[in-house]
Image 1 (cartoon, rainbow, N blue to C red):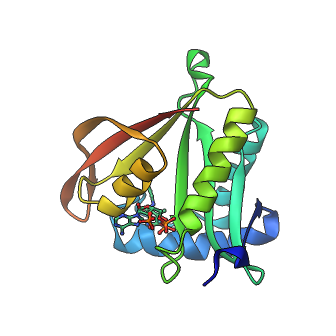
Image 2 (cartoon, protein in one colour):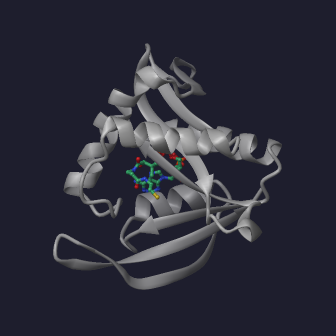
Image 3 (cartoon, rainbow, N blue to C red):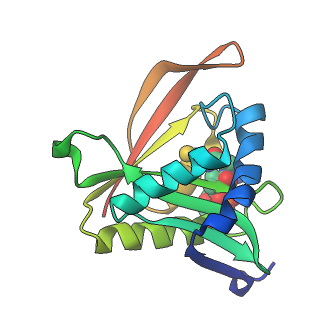
Length: 168
Ligand SMILES: CC(C)(COP(=O)(O)OP(=O)(O)OC[C@H]1O[C@@H](n2cnc3c(N)ncnc32)[C@H](O)[C@@H]1OP(=O)(O)O)[C@@H](O)C(=O)NCCC(=O)NCCS
């Protein structure tokens, strides 16, 4: 899968069903997301709208017009003193991982957030065992900011979160 086949662009409303199809299996079968019920398309739209309202990017990666991954930034916290800090979320479709798509998505997201004047980006990674995500964020210059123990609970187990941070 050559890299030049992957096109990164702003998400559009027509992409939401594919975004939902990518995300839902991670919600239903894994602890990389601590949601327990896959969000509806309406909920995905509401999250997209929230990001856009803050001039924050919501991107998709496409191959031959098909969505194979997405990434978006949202305010880390609503209280106004946190207004220069964002959190991010990135998901690549099963079957397309490890091919540089996540890197392309998150690199573009970082650039766009920086251009909008945001100063810090936070990754909240569910599961100290999510080595792929931890290594992935390290590869993009995120550093470890700590571990929160047993803050999540899913599939009958407590889940730690790993906090990582990048200055924009
Ligand atoms: C984490 C995720 C977004 C990474 O995207 P990806 O397209 O698979 O990753 P890339 O191919 O762009 O990899 C970029 C770098 O990340 C690291 N990396 C990615 N997957 C890795 C893995 N399984 N193990 C170790 N390092 C890995 C490597 O350093 C890699 O660089 P390299 O290929 O030169 O070695 C993707 O695997 C995914 O969607 N995982 C499930 C959902 C998830 O955990 N999302 C993050 C929530 S915080």
